[in-house]
Length: 169
Image (cartoon, rainbow, N blue to C red):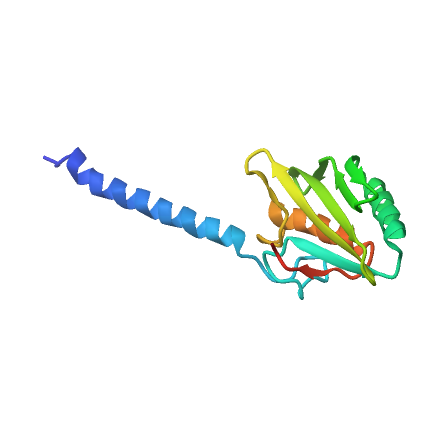
């Protein structure tokens, strides 16, 4: 006669599998936020991980820089939500991006700082149905939504000059 395992014997196995699944999910979640320094397709290896603001210096006047940023964002498909030329501030509406089977939305904010030279500062927000809304920052692995949103922000800044990391607040 064969002995049937009882529930009490199976319980430690179930607990072991649950613990293994839990630790595997922690490992995978950690890997999702630890990515390579260089973003695929960009020349951003000098920008530290977790950077969420970029700055571009220009010889343009503040008014010329403001106009150039607004036109460039509109050319990329962004609609303006809030603008103030006196303060040198622009914020776009969310723009839907579909790439590589992913669908997410990005919003870009730019500030024009009246210095010599003029400084353009960029930051943004990303939202996605599963993960919700967060700041765009250099984070995640290549191909992930956080890194794709970072690519968008870096590309926007790159169209106006050489972006450098702005220290996070």
